[in-house]
Image (cartoon, rainbow, N blue to C red):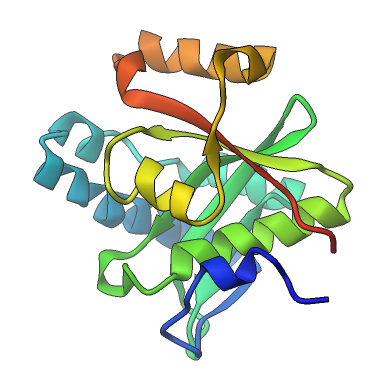
Length: 186
């Protein structure tokens, strides 16, 4: 049976593969997150661009839990990564970043689809994400690859706590949206 979500993502670099993150990958990932985040300056969000990336220690916790994956090319060096939390029984994408030298080639979508298949294999029914509503490579992009905005009544206690934490860190709640995508059948 064809993957109904895979058709939403076009990978223009056939050498890119997704694999489980390894311990020796972790020190490279904060630099990828920082480089990817720099694009927020172009939309007037310097504070987001300047925010601290996930620490190697935090990334190690994801990696040890089996909740971290990297996109690599033929040289097996990470060019992007994704990490997930389990929040209220769903796979919540905490961070997905692709180095800007490799951006706009479907690599973020490949990472998300990999997590989708992993989650479905774990009998997890959906992916969730909290992202910026109007930033072109955030909310609008995720809508194009099958995510939908969650109605307020759909936001679980765990997601509400996450959003409240963002507000405490100065993020405008009006700029954010929680998104949802049902997982595919493995």
